[in-house]
Image: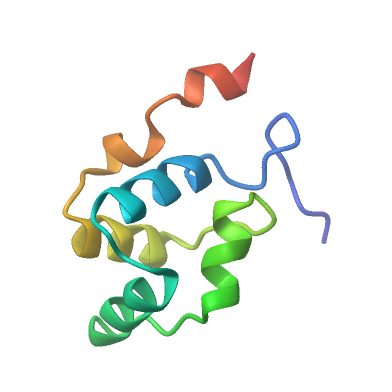
Length: 85
């Protein structure tokens, strides 16, 4: 199965995820710990790969990011228009 990309992006939230994580003063390890409490098992490398646009994001991971970071889905996809051009 071929991996589909949007203008060479594997995801559209990586940059915003990193921004909000740092704005909340969370390390990647802190984010992982909080996601694990929600039942979402990820590793530090998964966060790195998402933030650097080298990995796709599952829908339940996206939900977990919104809960842990206390942001909306719209916040995480803000700026997608620039990636569509």
